[in-house]
Length: 222
Image: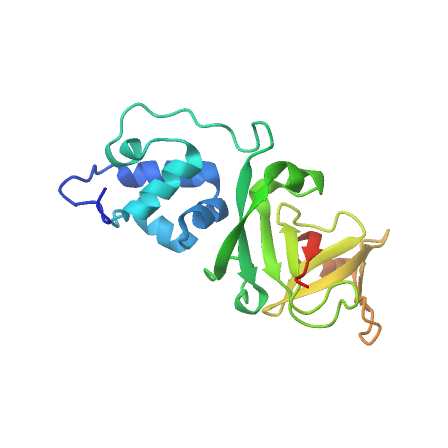
């Protein structure tokens, strides 16, 4: 397969098939598998020429043949997301907090992806389809989470569901806070570093907070 698909050989419906695979994988997983941004992949939906590397990566990630992506045929039956033995690996995209001013993944800020076992992700309570990694910066959560630690976030959690550590988007910044939900709907935001003050958010204001996800795990190099 040549590095770029020739325009004369290209089936006009290739964009529809790429979109089909993109939607079945989910945008973040498709981006991680192809090493392309979500925006770049979406360009192929409407006619941009896909490089062979993207076609191969989508074929490997979904189990379809590259020939089907390029030339069509009977629509394949894909395995539903989350099914299978649970021993397979999934690509979890990694983002830099400093590059996510509009939210995780909104600025094409994915820096890389790490393969993780699906069964392990489920075991720690993370949805493999919505998991991502975030490079944490700052000392607000020390000694629990240190500057440079890698956080694993379940982005399927879009609201405060229990007392835990969450990633919030506030004023163009991603904040990592230990959040306590009160009975009246207000929130208490705490930092593990005692040098930072405790904040209380009213029930009304809590409804306007953007919750990027819940932290399920963190790790660091030694």
